[in-house]
Image 1: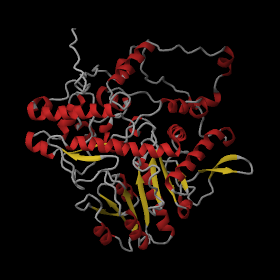
Image 2: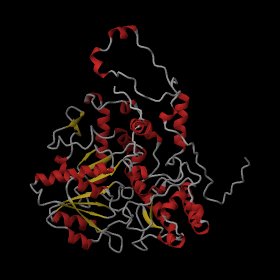
Image 3: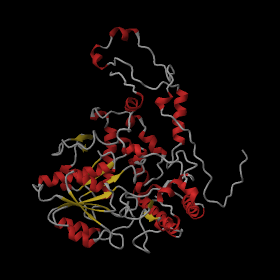
Image 4: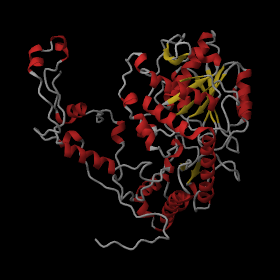
Length: 525
């Protein structure tokens, strides 16, 4: 095929993603094919038998896919080519998810045998290195936040919020205030896990909406706080990227009413080395190691939400915590807590994510952690100025003000003028190898999309992303049918999401699929 001459004045690139129509691996099975041949048992082993394991030995072989090694490799290579991710594209359109470059040396660290091959049931004496790393990670997080202890159990941000809600519940109950402090206040632009987890722990919810400047309404907050307030769960800056400079008034109101203050810092990319939860008078906070601290994002890799508290709440943290005995110069798992029966996640957290976060922080140090936030804010405001000059785009609230690490934009004007909304716009972005995220529900901002550049991307990459945005906007006005029928060059066209809501059709495992659609029932082991 003859290749056209590339136009180097064009900032976006021609793109076409591989589309393999790839079956799932069980459908590729070929009876008799083998990827590896396992050695036969030695005669002595055969003679000895396995009497003590008799109850554990299968009566029937599991119905596993039978494939050669080469075909297995091709299968997973095909799947990888149908993905879009931070290692392949300018992934700033993932919204509040803080997609950034993950240094590959950190993956190597997490893959070291001393971390990757250990078992959580091992003796403490054999995992001193892993315990020391978790302990040292906690010390850095304490310095960054001002909190006194951290629990690293949660497997992600929502689980960290659930841990916070559990601590608040236990604290309320321990004070004998179960029937008197039953309300938690949050804000509409805080992460949705905050009201969800508060409700799971039995609290009533009060939601604060923004004032005309996009900040949580202080007067509404004053009206909401009362003697029944157990806590406030708040994000700052919220998901629209506007910093609430009145935050200490919020925490003072709640403390004066005898409640606790929780700071959702799942995304702290604008604040490292600049502000701390302690100075804003928060009692609890959490970070996502898999966002701010550069481990792969939770949807694309293991997550870890580290949750910290001030001294008066340490006794309510789930056990065990990691401790250090100076006299014996050893690290240990500390189960000595009134909450030692509380469990948020099995064992001690997602160690590979913690290793990556530790490596990232140690490599940067305090000064360069601060520089991460400075560059992230700079990148965001560069993109903000460029996007706001594009046709059909707006950003509500705080007119004329800079934003922090992200901005929630609106395509409402574009939809009014072209009939094309953000859902169709996103599909066309895929045709250029880019991604755009809309927003958490509910859509308080009409036809929203959120962009967070982070510190990872160069000006050239930001300009490439902006050029794609501008190109798709131009298409919305000039060739709207092209946008309506997108994506055409991506791996997947329009997908059918209805099956996710139909439990009679859903099948989340191959065994369940076989039962529902093929009539095959795998024999019991």
